Image (tube, rainbow, N blue to C red; front, top):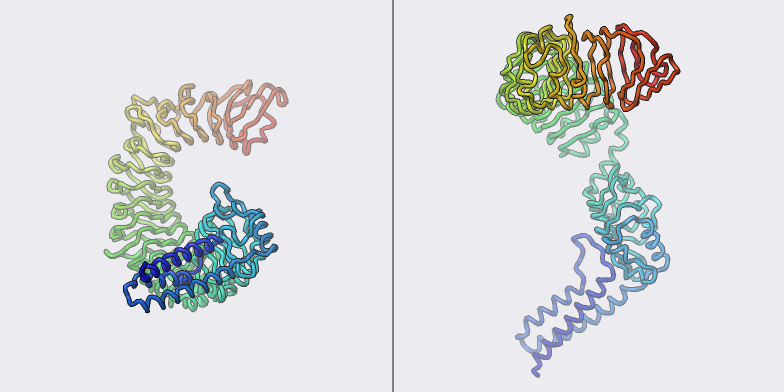
Length: 638
């Protein structure tokens, strides 16, 4: 056999032995280390040997010298590997077994913990790495189905030689990161990514940044910042200075409900990268700072419930990138909406319960992306411009001073919510204004001065659930549910309607049979102002199995309605009717219980109405005894 061939065989055998040795040793429990860790010398030796083999055609002398060098390196590495691996100390094994017993994990899924047994050397357990003295220096419990057990008193924190800890891809759902990590003074690498931890990050972890490489999606600089500003978040105004000096490139600021007081510090103006500001639910007791208008990249500004005062700067409305403006619940904040151009990006305008006033400009229609408008409980006046309605999904203009006719919603094909209640709107409401609103779920036009017929198109909308028309001047005739179709309505409020309402051939005057299409009706409010009475029959009352609120006050009822099997009833109002006679032998399955009256109080009575809270029977002509243990009911008016 030629010398060259023998050298190649020897190099091949050496490389194979080396590979087998390194694999055997690596199975003694590896732990992930930082990406910049140096490659093991074994790998360098393999690469070097392979290079020698690839150059086997070089001169014989060079190959021979290379072969001798490789054999030397192999010998050194084998000795080094033997020295690194040694049996773990008994106290280390005891701590690991305590850790295993305290952890909650799924044995069929576990790879590491399930194989930790007292009979074996702990340095040979999967996921465990030891040093030459037998101290545990690394734990890799990646994806080992752990769900709990790492708490402040865990034996994990008594492994004083631990350098690397990997808990990635476990399920510590709703568990807080223990502050005891700070006791691991030798720790250099910590990975808690995707481990399900929640709650506050312990400030104690910041003390480890000098010697520990974090892999928790939290950077060392962040901990230094926390140390710098933690004493400034005391409710004063210094927090702005601390943040602006520590986080010059901050984009999102969310400090809602932090008990801040005093004006917002102008030092925040340094942070020109702001895209979102959430500072609501504080107590500034000051105006909105003018410098907010200088944040040219601002997308969201939320300052709700913060006791803001005085005039709101119109320029803030005109920030070209602004998409959401929320100033809700600042009752002392006043202002008006400016004329807007074509470049506005505003999508959500929420000014509810502020002191904003004036008219809505026609140019508000230039906000082509505007989808949600809530101006409720303000002091706006004048007509509602049609231009505002083109792209809306949500509109709440309730409790203002809007006047004039109702605008057409015909172009608002995506709208789901309309509240125009408690204004001074008047005139007829054409049925065509609501045609095609296939996504409409809620409409409230109560407490206005609308007249004419109720729009019949409302009763054809496939998803309408709540229809509130009370305290208007509607009249005329209307077919409630054309063709006997079912309706998803669960709330229908018809208080104070005109005398001719519901007067059609298909629905007799005030006959509740006309509502049979409302199979899931939960709240029915009906009150007349005329001498006509509501007709209530057994068939009509059994049509509403989901009914929880029934208000039939002033409906000229002559007798009690047949209230059978209404287990969901919470509110019952039969006041101001003409119900007469003696209260005897009532047996109603109402409120998921039974109300029984028989003779005088104390005789065969049982009142167990766990759901019924209010019953109003005032202004009728009853006689007889009232059930004396009606104290189970929240309110009983008679």
